Amino acid sequence: MTFDTYEQLWDVSQEYLEKHVAFVNSLTSLMLERANQFRSHLFNAESTNHDTFIQDFEDAHDKLQGMCKSLQNVVNDWKRLFADHCFELSKTPSLKHLPDGADFTFNFIKPTLDFQAGQQVQLIVTYIPDPLDGTFYAMDGSQKDDIRMCLTPLQKMPKVMLTKAPPTGTMFIVYLDKVWHRAVCNIPATGCDVEAIHLVDLGETLMYEDHIPKAKLPEDMSKVPAYAIKCQDSSNSTQFPLSLYDGVSCTVVAIENDVVIVEHYQAHPKEEYAISRDTLTAAELEEFDEMPLSTSNPMKAVLGYVPKDDERLCKHYDPRTKRCFKGSNCRLRHEPKDSDGWTLDRDTVSVSVPAQKEVPPRNSYIMLLPTCVVDVDQFYAHVIGDETNDKNYERLMAEMNDPEAVANFKPFKLLPSLGELVIAKYDGIWYRATVCDIFENTVNVFYIDYGNTATVGSDEIRRWEDRFKYLPYQAACCRIANIRRVKPCHLEAIDQLYKSIVDKPLKALIIDNKHPWEVQLLDNDDFDIGEALIMAKLALPRKPSKFDAKAAIPG
Image (spheres, rainbow, N blue to C red):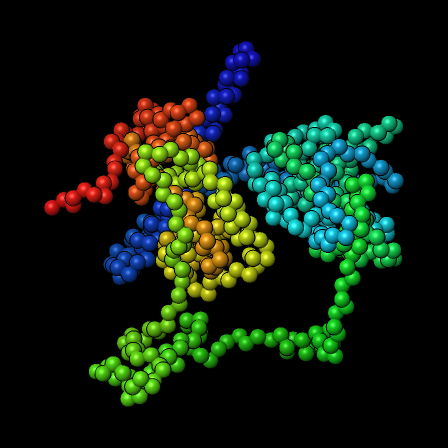
């Protein structure tokens, strides 16, 4: 075969792989949905009392086991296929030490030093080469949100692995301590054949080793200046006052040759007490830290809290007069207790965001960025082009995922209610969501800013905070106006629509602005995406529907 024939064969095989990867993702989602349906059907109140429960359970469990076995075979094959690659990433490389007195030169975009003498700055120490000379590297604490937004995608994006280091001055990424870092190689010096790499966002310089996993860096991220600032402590202290990853307050003394000379604030000495944990013995600490392992209150043991009905409800309440003998002087609630013993305590929860998204007028064009495909003719999308809204959403996500804010999120003591707004995690990031369904130890949530759903555990949801209410739902529910599905759950059509529209800015004509929006989607060449699906026999034609608010009601 000729070279072109081999290349064509490769392209066909790769296209087959890309097509079926999406198909496998759809199948696994269907498996999880089917398992949840089996569980809901088996363990509802009617089924558990039915005579055929045991037979129904065995049949459903056999189907569940069959799905598990088929998936396990695929997983085992993939593990064997990628065993070497996974091992390379999981093992910790042993790096050689830099030779004494080595001086390397690196070519990269230096950090922006917008500081003035006498300015107070917050720094985060990232690397201390030698504590004796007072030199250290740090990030600007005021830019931590920008740094996080820039570097977090590095950990999740697909990687194009490299077999050798790129040329000098070309930025790439290396995998060290289970984290991907931006790096650059040194400029070769005359008479020195030692190779080194510099981690531009930490300031650390390491010996180059071939076994270090490395990959290409996207061009747009190569143009972002380094975040590690070289600093010099101006104090002549014999003991270096800083530690790695400390957040410190400093005053800028001067900037010389891209080095920021700073003076570190001396922390106030901690007030010492006559009695503290340091003065107690091990036995005293054990007694002090001992927590009760049980409670004598059965309500607290069963419900997790103590109902307040006896404190809030008037015990002299008369059902006939609906009041007590004290009349208007009684400040307690006049209401009968529940006959079945249920508490009347109520916990107020948020179920909606008051801010409303602006609805585009009919026959107008807008730009959409689809985020989730529900079916062949239905999807969710962001309306793009409003810079104020986009900046507000970026700020909302930064606030919601700030480590200090996340640490203060309140967990649920009990499972949330249906329709309740929550903060839910997806792929390691916290988003706004609402509860769709509740299972034994998990809940199904709808992410209101993206339109997708997921089943999460109790450790992946937190109580809602009203400070995140200022921005309307970002996911707009849309329907392609001129098509309808060929059959329910048409995976091939859904997959094709997903590839055609998700995460791609598209022009849309608003046919009708009632929920869901009826839209006509156009690609970059102004070709109707709905017509393309009809031509591919993945959808059927449909006459666009409009809702006339002034029309008479039938009958």
